[in-house]
Length: 410
Image (cartoon, rainbow, N blue to C red; front, side, top):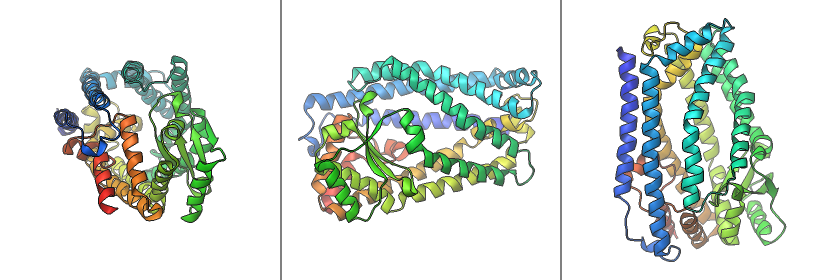
């Protein structure tokens, strides 16, 4: 057992322990007393149901994460990476094809192992709590579409990276440039080419809602290619809204379930929040951080990619770029865990700034508060998460924190 084995194994166990501790604390933090701010939207039975939803999902998470860790360690220490490498190498293909097949088989195995859990989550847990609207046919079609997209987009990107990694000392820089261009390209085509493969996006109908929303965008000087209604009800009764695209391709998507459950003023507040993220440059900041982060990853990868002790840690005899990619990813996981905490802190700050933008531009805090309350009640959100769980996992402040902050600012 060399130093790489110790680092990676320790990181896996520490991350699992941290998440387990956060989950257990989160369960203990569930309070039978409904916060006063929610008494107008939560009935006692619904609040009890929301807590049970948290308990069921948390316990299911214990099983899922434990299974994933056990199967990974079993495959690792049984020599699975070496066996697969020797098997694929025996086919005598070019190294890029060998790498694509090697990584593809591992991804397929991971997908097959996770499939029963995804089925149970969708058709048992979500069904039990009244959220699931996904039919078996839709579920299967989504899987097929996702796999085809992975092949059509992910396959060429991976092949390009494997090819570039063999170009010398500047390979990491070429890989960084290639992935940056690729990610910007996907971000640009996602609203019009990728997302419509899974959902139907319909321009918002003429009427009071459309007039109100577009009057607001003109008031704040924000140009959109359109506001669309997404048929989220095809898969779930949960509600949401999101921003996508950039440049002239910017658009806002509102779930049909969101429009069904909220008033025009509440929907305006939700739209204002999404626009606030762009007006405050949060999307640009996130994109730049992501690009910089990718550059650091490729630079560090260049330092460890072909180090024999890293391969020895996984019992792999032959050094290769494709296996090195996977092994470095596991070696890098402790850094990724730390960075994710800081990114969540930044994200929570951005959410508060977007909420402030709503107050500044609509001067209607009550509608934003009402929207947050309804979203929480409808989605059975946990109203009293433990602070450590929030610190580790939340990209948003808790809904109670957001409401109290809005009340204080108003």
